[in-house]
Image (cartoon, rainbow, N blue to C red; front, side):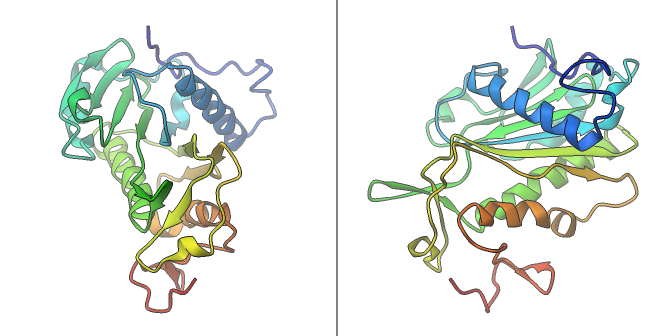
Length: 251
């Protein structure tokens, strides 16, 4: 049975979470644990094989065993997390509350948003892919926009709907992505190299309670995404601002 991996407070004495570990190290361990869980089917719905985007938004108050959300109210909150119109199924489960795509629609797109009793949100979905001949590409800037959209929308729900306070840790990973290349209307796939790793973990981000600008604060994630293909940084930033129609964009 799928369980809430964030239900119990993280033991301070556990080998994977030494007392000296900082929040970023703890988030890194949580991310690695969830990647392995997802690969071994520890998910609320059955997922097809293939590339996946994995997001975990973890309130740092998850360490507090008293930090729990009234499950009877989760459905109301999760209605605001319908990140795609295809997320048309929702119900309570043992871990909290789940919204996901109808299995009949999963041939071309799949995903779920799991809201845990701790207030942690996990989102897993298929990235925007494009097939050319026998090769598979991740479509940009659709991926770049989607990455920021998922994090921004879920943090807003945690703050405004769940009334969570304090910092929120964010982990993002691309799973089963070996061999992929980026694609854009400007044809950069000609110069980009293939992913040489099976999984791509992005840097852990701690979002403070005071303010959050998704394009400013998530730039390290966008840069990591493009550095994995051999570029020095994301080409969609101009003068520090995200610009998907950047007229100076060259490959």
